[in-house]
Length: 316
Length: 316
Figure 1 (cartoon, helix red, strand yellow):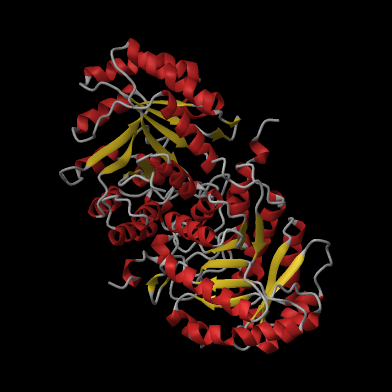
Figure 2 (spheres, chains in turn blue, green):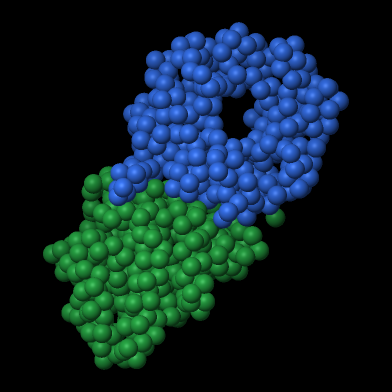
């Protein structure tokens, strides 16, 4: 247990990965209010929206306006998602979206084609173009977001060897284009990961690339997200994505009622209880979760937002 | 990770610890149907009810009738709870309740008084009487159930040293009365445990009594129950309580919406994914969870019951 980190960074993805799956489309005012509440809770990395086609994803319409209205807070980075050069252009035009030039890839070919209309090979083939676009904007890409890194409803288990192979490919493309891969975000997009698998994959990545930054993006589809995060922390992982209240999931699709991202406040609570710093104020985070619940108009699945944290019960 | 056990035993407590907290009181027919579904799912240790005052706990009325109507299945043990000699008598009279002569104690004095009307000292003082009652019934007590073993809303954190002290006291009382303590059930009654704390307590118990059996009774009040179970498995714990669908919690009390016991199907799913045998059929367990949800008339919090397990997606 002495291997647990002293501090972890939680990137809040509720306003993007969470809200994009919700049935109710929030207004710009509502999104700004939610993000303000998240900033007030001490979150410093926040995905605030997507620059994508509003006809395809109406939940993400108006992201530029949202970004324009966010407060300037020292140390707070607003991040966003885009899928094509036009989206990148719009994000740059705001002047307020933090750019890390992250490239993205999916570890399952079938899911890649369904979700992005491109195979794995086609996506890797496009990477030099993206690297060029980012460099033109003054950013040298050094990060990879790998979706479905643990398993896929279309292809089943994703073996860790495959993940390592893909990371190596992207690293090589970056090297060929004047950059290097320094950070990977491993996403359990469809809720396949278990703690033993997380441990194995993290160990394998660090065994091959000891300096690689690793962030985990965990979905709680089958209830294991917090356990997966704990297993990762035991191996030294210090960066996690999470969504306030556990926003997202499949409230209105095939897996009706399936959970979304790991709930930010539950993850932060576990850290706080184990003496791991997150910089988050749990009471305020619970307030943000309650606001999110009110805004999306359905009960969210976060636990600490219902039961409250423990500070109030402790004798001092 | 090589320390994970090959198999774990899950004791289902939904029909007792779960249903006793539900607003809706089930009929005997409904309880029997639920327990039958749990047996069909492969569960072999099931807490089926309590022999307590039906005026105080109407949800548990008719337990004797429930027990009388349960199927005789080789290897299946039906267990129950009682708080006084009359309850024990009623349980024995059924001839079908498995007897382990477990003594119970609460690690928080305030909670002990509120919940059982007796202090810790008074409860320990009564233990020779209970041992006598069990021995008269042909059972030699060798087990202790310790409630609030991690923390208490009235007294805060429960230090592991206190837990060890209480275990030592009970062991000594048993020794003075011709028995010995061989098994402890550590209950996180109010959802205080975190994985680091679970690890520490389990290690301390086994460091002092290497042969002691340990079962964990985990509540998911603050979302950490599955992570706590994983942490315990890493230290070699192989026995857990769980409630189908995550029944229980505080659906209608102070912490409205707070989660109950760790969901049996989520715990079993994690085990199955990590190659740990439980003897449970997940598909049937999900059916039992859906039945439980229908019977109690509110959405349960289990995750796998909503998303389904992964077997269906795997290529063979």
